[in-house]
Image 1 (tube, rainbow, N blue to C red):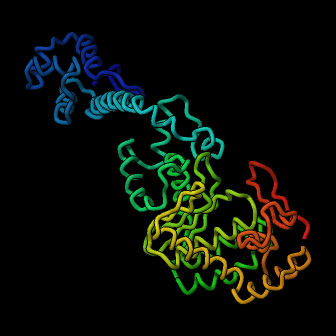
Image 2: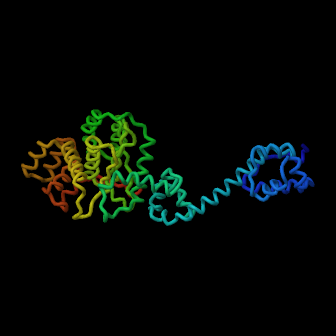
Image 3: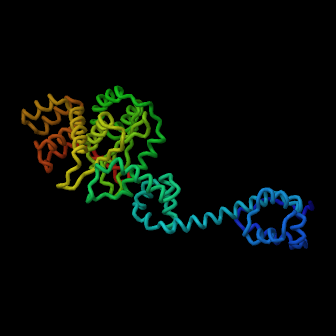
Length: 380
């Protein structure tokens, strides 16, 4: 092979391989018919390769190498890049047809939270969403969400104002975080012990309780993930099993107060321990809309579990029977049971002993995600 004809590299762009072949033949003064004869093929086949109607196969590339002295890998790389570019063009058109699907997702919020990179255009929105969900097509996403929906249909109301796209994105983020978090195998007895021990964390600041809660639960096979709420999710929490040995409790901090956060956690823990290994979403139904009897029963069971795990029933009955719901008494009772005073206020409101507009709400701790503001703590 002459020095002038040596290949110094392969192009990093896609071109029609036949165009390179045509120019190579012209530069060497080779007619297509003669080249075809040297390769042992018909002139028609060479013309089809030049026109892009026929691909360069590995066997053909080896023949080109012998006749032209240009590596077979060069021709195969050209062919591969060209076919890839054609596939990308077809794929981009398919993605373009799905732009309306992407519009239903809270893209801006997902970018702000760092869940996806900012899309360059509408088509890129579709591509980035598919990559986020780990699926190749919108059809695959629909099949995946339909499978999950079958497990949660009994929890949903036809007129409930949540967006399935937002819910699916929120759930997916939880799965991604939990999937990357090492956990021991699920240990039911161990998890029950952990639940008793973490009650004391309710009096701590987030920078203390959050890592401790995550670590303790991970040791017994439960991944606890705090995921900021997306617009139109309307979720406080969700529980599901990622495998037979790993459960996920996902919390949104929707109401931003300690009583809601901790009750939701213990409520979800109740689902882990009491109910089948299937997805359960904690959704707020519109006023006047009742869940199915089965769902309502599971919710009652989880609520009772949360309430009695936080505060022993006998102690709660004695406290409420006394009728002293002053701030000093609430603080004292909370301290006796290693709980945040806000949790006591929340339970009193839930049981109709206090108004939701009470000034005792000042005993609650208000949380904010870092992007919103610093965490605020009331004086205790």
